[in-house]
Amino acid sequence: MAASAGHLRPGRYLALFALIVIVLYALVFLTGNHKPTPKLGIDLQGGTRVTLTARTPDGGQPTRESLNQARQIIERRVNGIGVGGTEVLLDGNNVVITVPGEQGDQAKNLGKTAKLGFRKVVANATQPVVPPQTTPPPATGTPTGTPSSSTPPSSGAPTASSSAPPTSPAAGGGGAPAAAPAQQQSTTPAPPSSSTTPPPSSSQAPAPSDGSVDAETAKEIQAAKALRQNKDLIGADGQPNQELVAQAMASLTCAPNAKDPLEGNDDPKLPLVACGDHDTYKYLLEPEFLPGTEIADSNSAYDSQRGQWTVNLSFKSEGTKIWADFTSKNQGQQAAFVLDTQVVSAPNIQVAILDGNTQITGKFTQSEAKDLSDILKYGSLPLSFASSDATTVSATLGLASLQAGLIAGGIGLLVVFVYCLFYYRLLGVLTILSLALSGALVFAVLVLLGRWIGYTLDLAGIAGLIIAIGITADSFVIYFERLKDEIREGRTFRSAVPRGWVRARRTILASDGVSFLAAAILYIIAVGDVQGFAFTLGMSTVLDLVVVYLVTHPLVAIVSTSKSSFLSNPRNLGLGAVQQVGSQRKKSTTVGRANVKEA
Image (tube, rainbow, N blue to C red; front, side, top):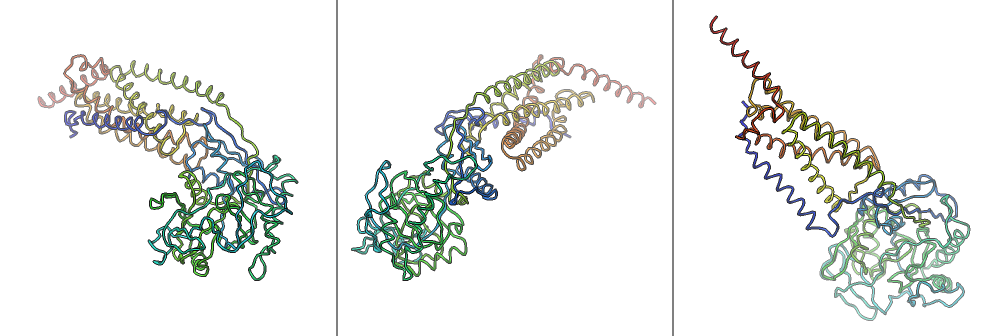
């Protein structure tokens, strides 16, 4: 026999729901630095559309395969960095990134090539920091610094380190970053001197819309390659060609935001002259001995001992072997971590790093370290890109559609309310109250999801929410109709509530389970706006169960046990007609049993 309504203890269910709502809204209003409103998609709040144009060294068109690969990598970067509501599409031979709100700069950073390689340092030279507007020195002029194979004496060089450095380099397993000037040996840890992540550069001349670069830009790339990636920069004996190196360094301008035509277009098989160390040094580097594709994982962390942010790398099995062999054979030498032809860090190798766990140390901010880590983790682009176009997207059309959707949703809610009040009366009031509480729950969850996972609400998501109203109302209808069936069997309203709930909840679970399964499959196989629709539909379906279990059923149980004459009147509950049927059936059953006894 089903438990009575009194055994339900509805106050506990309502208290649990109230606690959930209080906790959610406490998180909404007391956490985060954002307004207590859901994040909106680009169709509702506008945003920025950035067109990235591929740059190929020979000026030709990029292959479709490389463009698709670049689009997929940028999508992975979007998911890793947490830019919500972003679309990455191919438009001909261009990659178009659309981001909501004021995230245009992040969209440009998503198009960074992030081509990482490890090269041995052959020589370096100091140079004065040139302001961005200064004209680069001519190729035939005097070099800004004299190439030298020694460590720069001015600032000291950092040491290669493992992700868990010991207290002394002599301990083995990867030394800690330490200042090590040439004139003295030191094992005292100190912050290294390295450059921050270079900002994305763009071509001076606008790139055509077909994805190729113009002839002038292609010529500029080839000229830079001829000077800075000449195979004769390093002789057969491993020594630098002083004259060629001086010319290459003189042609290179190391300045903040300076454009490097070789960015993403360098040849890993040839030597390279590059900038680094906060635009203080120019380096002559050997060909790449370890590609960035051998990186297994990357993450950023704060080194509290040295007070700086670092990027920690772990290599794949083959990369670990190559790195261990290099650090074993080149102790006392420098290894350059080269990102898009920019030396991010050039540590001294003081001990062999055998486990492959290595740090990139430099003057990183928290966001720079995280951006670099995410870019390295999700892969380098097969092409270099220039931001050829950035436009502001208006939300006017989306707002008009939103107003139309809200009007449609309001009309639908009004029809549901009128139907429930007319057909269920007081039970209809409970339906309206449950829908209102469900809406409050959905709103808080949307706000928090926008903060925690970057979820943005767009027009497709709003459509999912409107459809979810019908699913929630359907759960109430199933429950109330089951109550009517029990009353038709001759039971009172009080006894019908627990029996009707036991049978109705099976149907409610089955119905919501099918809806959630459909939303989950749609989310997995769909992309873009359809995913937003499926997400809100599935989320609302789950919250519907919370409301039905913790609100609707307890409220009905409270009404059924109430001693109020108004609440106990079947006509006020929309149950008058079915109760008459139940009474007649009960009376006929009683008469039938009496006749059987007489017989």
